[in-house]
Image (cartoon, rainbow, N blue to C red; front, side, top):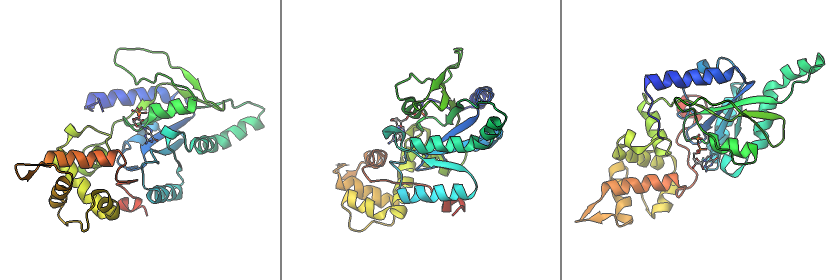
Length: 286
Ligand code: GDP
């Protein structure tokens, strides 16, 4: 992530999203299916000002399917329109379209009753950096579009991208929101999944958090990947063991930094399998 959020940036991002909202019918809010709550902007409700909104749990191919189902159920119970998508491999796009149509159905029905043609649904994709906004826009458009965020000083006319089916149009520049780092757990979850750069937080701390979380949530996957019979209870010992197993030893000591990088790389490249680091139960939503 190239963006460091400071109050000035936040105010500007918010202004840009607000401007775009005037042009659209539906907000498509992308979050990371592995960390759906941590990868959203906590002020998004306020920022989107009551526009109909579809939540998309993206990167569902990398998330634990059982946990993704639990998120879908928990959010639907709260009357939130939500779909799971794998934008990279174009999975779930039909459901996404139906979700957007459902949000507009009443309004469109009323328009038709009055003899008016509702036209295509106009949508804006929003989300934090790296969540898959550009990928999704390209997949929905069915072709590669040079998706750019808003750059300071560059004024650009908004373009509408017609989608493959033709029933929806997307703004070509997504709305970029900022994650909220103030809660340390949010920072660790975003760092572990690769949503934010490692240098924002301490690498050792991210790796220790990850070792602890994986031991608690996915012990079998962890044992299998690193050929460990019994997981040590202590996260430092676990990282050391992982380092030893992979020969990351010099002068008789495990290279803790290399072991940390290895664990995080393996998680981010799905070598440890499909993993979710946040469940509805973590937020008393189960
Ligand atoms: P943006 O910053 O929100 O526009 O994010 P990008 O579209 O640039 O995606 C960031 C990274 O996530 C890229 O490496 C994409 O290939 C990857 N990505 C996006 N969507 C998915 C998905 O559904 N599954 C997987 N596995 N990777 C994805």
